[in-house]
Image (cartoon, rainbow, N blue to C red; front, side, top):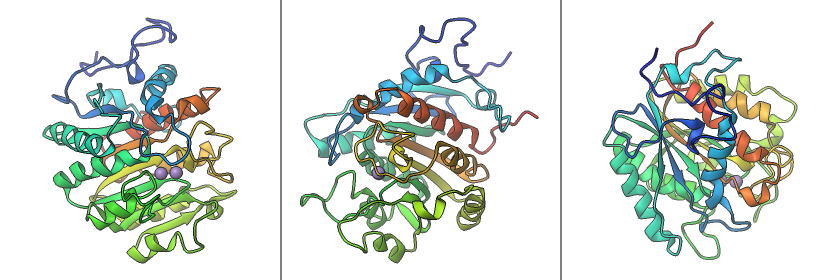
Length: 317
Ligand code: MN
Ligand code: MN
């Protein structure tokens, strides 16, 4: 028997009962001794339209109760490969965005004193900026696989420099990301200006609009992405659930028609296998708009797939 933490099986405790941790893993207070940790970052005061992402971590954990330990498609066995735990939530100040950002960075700096790969359950996309400040402090500028309906590269929104729609401009300006090793997949919809996606391209980012993805497998794209980034570069996955079509992920704050399918989302995350993934996040799940629970269920599955794509994840065949 493995000494690694295992999800509590549905054959030991019904899936509608038992612990409320992600994947029903044993809870743990710190990242000590872990290879991978999950952190709830339920911030939603950086969002521009619908709120509710503060409830994302709790709902993703709830829907994750259905996830079993092995991928039937890839044979990946993350819980036989890594010591993984849910280390709980960050105590945000929901009355103060700036203070919350500093709290997130400090919390991540403490986590990153350990040799652990952190994955965040959002929360709106604003959380990625303070997370990257800590990540880049450890690794330097990282490569970035960013899935989203939006580039999140506005200069300001309503005059504010830090919102969920400005974070990737700030991250590139602050040198947290290597833009030549960044790809943004799924962007679409209406813009403030017709050149809204150009700023990313001017920095050297590869921008893949949703229309380029329609009706296609994204496996060839991910082969190109792996070549663009290379196998050794520390790489972060930032997955905004609104990258998916609202038919697949309605529970989000700024939905845009014509998005990626859940199949394509799986192809993107599975296509990250072979990259040096050092962390990631799954953001913008807003449970009040997720009447079926499908958005949070999909989010939980995508987080499982991120585990399966970590370097060193064993595969059973
Ligand atoms: Mn976003
Ligand atoms: Mn978005």
